[in-house]
Amino acid sequence: MTATPKNQKVHLKTLVPGPRSTVLRQREDEHVAPGLQGYAVMAGIAVERAEGSAVTDVDGNTFLDFIGGIGVGALGHSHPGVVKAITDQVARASVGSFTSESRVELLERVAKHPPALGVHRLQLYSSGAEAVESALRLAKSHTKKSEFVSFWGGFHGKTMGVLSLMGSTFKEGLGPMVPGAHILPYADCYRCPFGTTYPSCGLACVEHGRKQLKNASTNAIAAFVIEPMQGTAGNVVPPDDFLPAVRELAKEHDALFLADEMITGFGRTGRFWGVDHSGVKPDIVTLGKAFGGGFPLSGVLTTDAISQAKPWSIPSGSSSSYGGNPLAAAAGVAALRAIDEDGLVENAREVGAAMLEELTAFVDEYPFVGHVRGRGLFMGVELVADKKTKQPLSRTVTRRIFDECVRRGLLTMAYAPSFRIQPALTIDHQTAKNGIAVLREVFDEAKRTNLWGLT
Image (tube, rainbow, N blue to C red; front, top):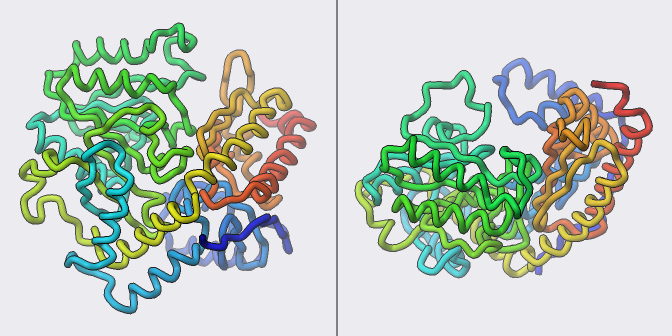
């Protein structure tokens, strides 16, 4: 078992951001293009080093990290197993598509945890969007059909094919989209689009989707593309019978079921795969984020039969310049070894349950906390202006909450009213408590000042 830091704490030496961070950010702003990840820009810090669930900036301030690289940092920062694997491998060979010992071991380790019986054929890539784009091409190759179904709130990447499947306003101004995309309601029960209540709703979202496809599709659906639990939408956890109902709908259209496990895979939700909570058996699975232990690594998993589809399966038909290189494979092996040997799936389940219990109490304690949900270390908090109407807090207020967290040494995604919490799978109980204590301090001040008088 790898020794990981325990009981990590905030340690602040300067005001945040500090003077050295400010200077570095100013120098960077002279040349960097806009559009970087929002939390990094808003925090204003420059990182010197990081370990476990703690990040230290160039001014010597140490923060607790509840963002976790938005799922990428599942093993925490600078995990010693990953550091050693990358160091050893880069000194031997790092690029190229030739077979390597590390890639063979990576394939074997993934095959030990199939999301469904027979789903073991793996093609490797370096980004989430790249993997999902490949999965779409695979679905078309196998089914010889051209349409896709995705869901409101869904996020599968920012390249043009997957952008067309995005179920949010993010894509406004970027049209026209790729034709043949159908976007159905997702089972976000806190904000039910039909104003119903589960389970008496009878999964109205699925029934609406069934009618929509009957009237809008050309009966040429290649695949249903779905996150078992939605990340970008706010770590939304659907009822366990939602995915089976969607799977049945896919069968009605003779379409594949494509589970996007970028965020939910590798133990994040307290089970190895997000689909494990519902028992759904996918045909294709896309994976990434935690996969490389912080190194860019993603992939597409499928069956023997589906993987043979042409043109996807012809030489170079599904390859990538960076996919499956020895360095990425070594990082992936180290990450999967740590997840197994260090019991990180169980840790996510246990620490996540304790965090969720403490956070759930916030609903009664704070007038602006409308709902708390989660599975494992995949949690969401709804910040609302009114609990009855569920009107989200304004971005002005949530930005203030984010800033106050950073100022006190906690890195969060509280800048959005659907506030996601997803720390490293290696986080221990006490470090998690230390982080929640900072969040409670900020929420106490927000309550005392009536959200600082902001609107």
